[in-house]
Amino acid sequence: MPTIVIYGAQDCDDTQRTRNYLTVHNIPFDEVDIAQDAQAEQFVIFINRGYRSTPTLVIGEGQRKLILTEPSDEQLAAELA
Image (cartoon, rainbow, N blue to C red):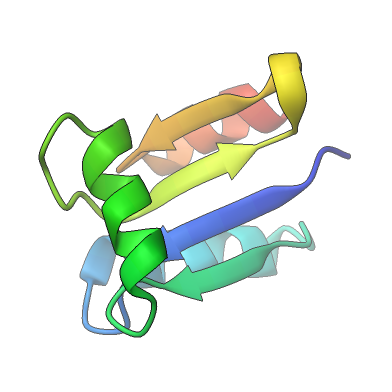
């Protein structure tokens, strides 16, 4: 299973939904709260072309890295299959 990092915010419904999806499906992940980490917030803004979109997920590492912004449960299921 590739590593998964959620860049999100505690008050974001989509972040909560994504966290719940991964937890229910026993998929391990790390989480970074961009409200508490300015460098992570700048990363999210850069990746999303100026938008502070949460959640932003980074799946995998290096050249095999996949970035998903505000994915639906269906998109998560497809990408993690």
